[in-house]
Image (cartoon, rainbow, N blue to C red):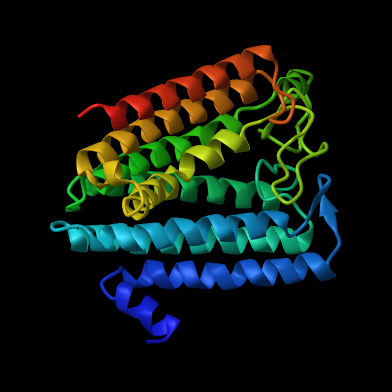
Length: 313
């Protein structure tokens, strides 16, 4: 059997439109890499096609996961399928607007500079609200999934809930900054309303590709970390099952379920930690003593909890 045939066989029952969206976005991500190589324009200090690339990769992961999750539902599968179709349409429309703004060399988010820019951002904001509501309903439906393996059972549920929290954290970026509010009070009209950088204006030095600020706090980090719990926790459950052949203790489904729950708690702690760090205008690459202490405590608690989970019979 070829690799392609094997993949087709394993994904036969998956939700088709979202699986197609995931594959399409994967191809688009490759096209964005090509655009990065030939179009060297920048916007706010970042390559103009970096944001479309990141959204394509994130969307591909998002829809691949939901395509699989919908296939696990014993009930409400039709409702979940319709909601996932709605997600595909909303994301596709938002992505077209994102690429349109990138091609124009204009910011897609927070942009209030012209009536067209403000209208596009307003429409995208309403689309995101629709996406959030649909994801909320899908998260509730995920609680009805049938998964025989208890570790995967909890990984799917915890991942869906934490992912919804991560999406919700995006709202922190929409609040006007102190400088923007001051401009309003002075009778002016700011070109941008909202920001992802805390403590500095958007557009400063950042990490390659990701663009996360290396000089101030960045609210994109908790948004990204939380949102992708939907992939990380099921992968943790799959990884533990794969390791069961080498480590006999992991053959116990209860032990793996405990480890997944500890992993979910640790992931929630990590999301809270990077949110706290960003809101204090602190760069992800320059943590202070308080952040390092909290991170150490989180690692220690996770390690001790994992040790207890494996040792306890």
